[in-house]
Length: 230
Image (spheres, helix red, strand yellow):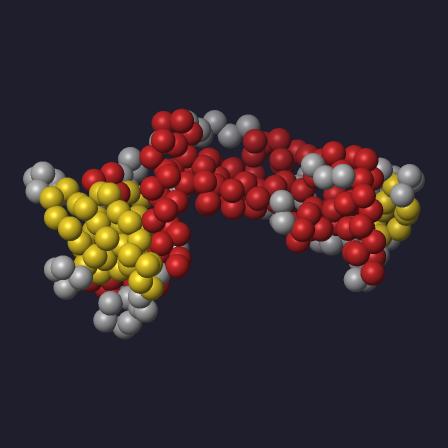
């Protein structure tokens, strides 16, 4: 867990409490040592967060220093929980970790009643159904973020194979199928490739998006206005 996330969770664990929270409970819930908790609390106090208490006794936020709680409806919370389940099942480890971290932060500030209702959602996404295929999604996601030119060995729907160099721009999920949107240097145009039909390696070249060959142009080519992507 990143230190910034840990500090966030400490603050919200103390929010609204009437009795001091022992450092041991904080350490157990965060999965860190007592020394780390002591150091983090001291750093928060130094930075101006109104935490009272001491090691061996426990900690409280000074009265009047509570942070306003996040206001979600039960339906909004269930949407976040279900969305996290979809990300974990389909989007690879990188985004799954991000989704879980975000939910941990939200969970830290929820009233117990709302937290329980959200966790009882009956919309499930069996993770094992797709998890074996998500490694390539992680690799392509990383290539898109780093703007790495990829060399593909691609097999199309007719069984024909070709070698391409592409500039990867985005990923789209169509249920059980992903597609990679890219600029194809062989065809000199935008193309969509299915990850399950490709073998690829990074060439070591970094490309620069341009107006003609970047994401905006790809979306326009696909007939999807950028402002409608959410």
